[in-house]
Each structure stands twice: as structure tokens, then as C-alpha cells.
Length: 347
Ligand code: 1HN
Image (cartoon, rainbow, N blue to C red; front, side):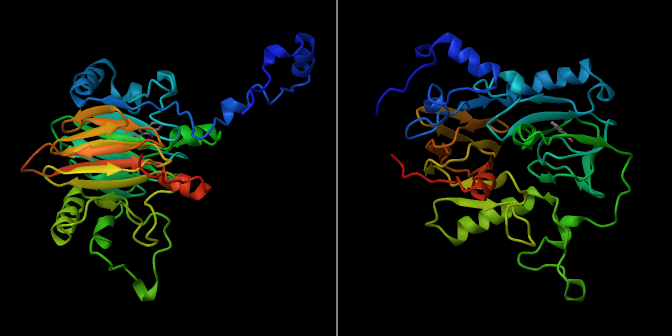
């Protein structure tokens, strides 16, 4: 492979003449935008410990009232992208949000898709598209693009959740904006109950739902039970993993990011092959190590880490007796839709 010409190899007045006409030569930058054999990610393997986040988040609760914050969030920023970019990866944003008893985070809707993974506390709820979703540790609550959402808290302890959004991508597309609204009318019934029984879909007069997002709350009790029965039924299965899916289409729950729960059996080590999407690991229950290439993070409950794409990730459960439960978010639906999804053989 020959070295390509550098910008400095060109006469300065030629480069100026180009720039004056909004033109630039490709060849000095070609290897940067198209590196040989593998991408050079900005995303760095990064760990955010809940024990570090929690006191600082509670301090934010004292420093900034909810009406001065709208959403009281500490962003889990990846230093590889620059902290000000508020990115965990190219397409993923992560934040820890605090809602105190009696507080209300007003209704709005926006183009980026969000999900909440509830981390601690009880008594809070998120109303999405008129569905009042109770927030219980480990629950996944969707806030898909364009749907009204607000959060409230009728309990008496702080509630914290992890927000995962595709904000960096939607912002990059210059498509990110929000609209404020008034308090939503709460519709009767609990959306997830209608889809809470495997393979059985509501079909009034033989009609399937035409809602783009028919299910908004995925209770942790259901996901955990599904993982335990999968593990019990298939003792030889390595990856005891479920995908949070749209029950009407069978596809991913949201269009851009993918969401999964994984159970590691006691003592299990699970090697994942390098895949093109970046990924995020949040420990719901138990203990787990996440090794990203040569870097290893030992997660305790509520810790979160991320891995760049095209990198092998190995998960391990150090406990000899208890399973570990990990929530995973990644960029798989996006990569698949764009046709750039790849799985590489493990080295
Ligand atoms: C947002 O609307 C929420 O509704 C949380 O709770 C985090 C981060 C960026 C943009 C919008 C929420 C957000 C957000």
C-alpha cells in the first residue's frame, strides 16, 4: 500500500484556492475516513460505577430543583468522544436520572427514542402515550420517538433510572427536537397486561393492533422469569438471552437501538464475538465481569459499562451459587437496517 500525498505536499496557494471555493482534496484524508481493515472507534471501553454516580446525583437533587432541570440527569459520557458530546458511543446516550418524592418531570415528546431501566426506589411512574407505567427495579419502559412522556413520584424514597437514548444519532442527523405539552390524560388499563402472555395477541374482531409501539413496559419480573425458564429448559445453552421485542412484529422494541437481558449461570464465562455495533452492559442483579479486549471491569449491581464495536467482549459470573442478570443495549437494529452489521470470527 503506497503512502498517499499529504496536505503539506501541495502548494499553499493551491490549497487556499481550493478552500476559497469550498473544495478540499480527498487523498490527504482518505486513510482517516477509511482506515485499513478495521474502523478506528472513538468509543472507549468505559466503566461508570453506581457508587460514584449515586452521591453526586443525590447532590444534584439538593443543588437543582426539578423545575430548573426539567430532567435531573447525570450523563454517562464517554471520554473517547469528549465529555461535552454526551455520547456513550456513536449512536448511544446514557444518563442516570433522579426523581425525588413529590416531583414531576413535565410532559414532552421528542424525536430521539428513549428507554428507562429502573435502578432503585419505588413509587415513581412514567406516563407514556397515556399509559401510566409503574417504575420497579429492572423494569424497561419505552419512550419511542414522538410519544408524549412525563415522570412523577408518589413514593417517599429517591428513584433513579438509567436512560438510554439514540440521541447522538438523531442529533447527528439534524433531526433532534422536542415539543412541550400538558399533563397527559391517563388511559385505563395497563398496556403490558394485554401482551403479558407469550404468543397470545389481543385481536378484537380479528384485528391486530396497528400501533407502532403496542407495548411500553416490560416488567423485570417477567424478563427474569423468562431467563430462568430458558436456562432450566436448555441446560446446554450458553447465551441465556432474551430480546425486548415489539410483540406485534417480533422485531426490536425500538427502531434504532436493541435491548436485551442476559442471564449468566453461576460460574459461567460467555465469550461474545466481535460485532460491528457498540454495546452497553448494566448489571441488574448478582455480579459480573465484562472484559472488553484486554480491559476488564468488575461490575457490582447498578454499575454500567460500554464497549466499542468490532471488539470481543467476554462476560463472566464470579459467583459459584447465584446467577447474574445483565441488561444490554446496543446499536444492532441500526447497523442491520443500514446493511453494515457484521459479526467477526473471534481471534
Ligand atoms: C429526556 O426527554 C429524558 O424524558 C431523559 O426523561 C433524558 C436526554 C436527552 C434528551 C431528552 C426524559 C434525556 C431526554
